[in-house]
Structures are given as C-alpha cells and as structure tokens.
Length: 145
Image (cartoon, rainbow, N blue to C red):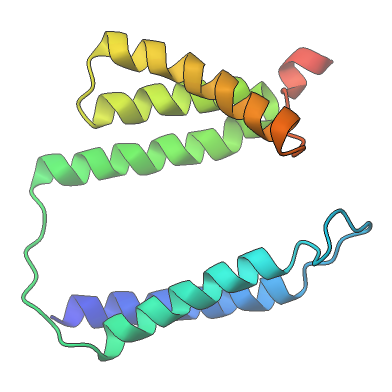
C-alpha cells in the first residue's frame, strides 16, 4: 500500500521537474504553429494528474511480480536506454529495427517473426515520419560521415 504512495510522490516530483524544464523549451525557428513546448507540457500534466489520482485514491494490496517478470522489465528498460543512446549514431531505421526485435522477443514472439517485423517496422515508420508527416529523423552519423 505504501509503495503506491511512494511511487506517486516520486512521479509527481519528476513531473514537476519535467514541467519546469519543458516550460523553458524554446525554438530558434517556428516549425509548427504552437512551437515545441505544448506537447511535453500536456503529456507531463496528464502524467501529474494520474500520479495525483494514484496518490489520493484508494490503495489496494500490492502483489509484486515474479522474478522472471522483473528480469524482462529490466531487459525492456535496457533496450530502451540502448535505443535512446544509439538513435542518432545508427539512425532511426536501424535502431527502431533492433528495438522492435528485442521487444518482440521479450513478449514471446518467435525469432523469425521478430526478425521479419523489425526491419519492416523500422522502414515503414521512417517513411511515414519522413515522407508523410515531414518529420526529419536521423539516418545515423555512422553512415553519413
């Protein structure tokens, strides 16, 4: 019961820090009507609301996950950290491909399905963002230098 309140308090503090940082986001040029500030602010406000509801809401008994679930969660977090680190270096398509493969394997996909879906998702998402939504994504400094 107490762990929910501790989590909600820590999450509220982190959201407050994020809101402070997000409020200071400025862009040198305007690439959309509202600028880059509203999206992180709205997301952080929604997360703050959820953390507040968790903090003041009714507390249920907590059943911690089994060890294998915690291990998979740790691997998922590690995959996301590696994705964030490799994003600019190896580029969006390859890093998204590798992330998709690792997440698919963590969620029980067959290796063949994971290896097929990774490149497809990396290429399709890159095309969708770059061509359809006109969002510039890095191809990777590994390939451009």
